[in-house]
Image 1 (cartoon, rainbow, N blue to C red):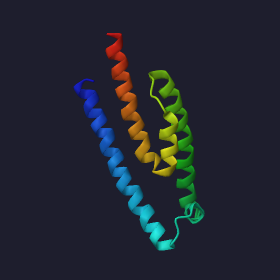
Image 2 (image 1 turned 90 degrees about the vertical axis):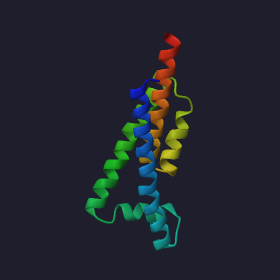
Image 3 (image 1 turned 60 degrees about the vertical axis):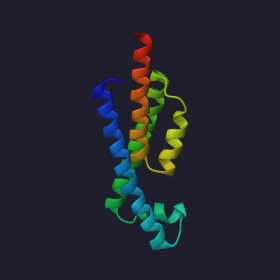
Length: 117
């Protein structure tokens, strides 16, 4: 992997770490506020008003596009176990797992280039 690719991976890693803190600090606060770890109150809160529903729908449909991209790219460049990234996107956050997938993708591209050389 060249220097630019390493910097790109570090950037993706930084985004993933920031996203982990940004999402889970709020997830934990929501669970403490509601006294529940159930998914039902969380989803209900996503649709509490039209603005929240707009953002929820936007992110949901972005996730669908990202998952299609992840599966396609995983097959194209040889990233194994793409289903794990998709599963963990729902359990952790897509904002965390998509950059982690992009790191794996970049490493697979570099490895393929090394084999082809």
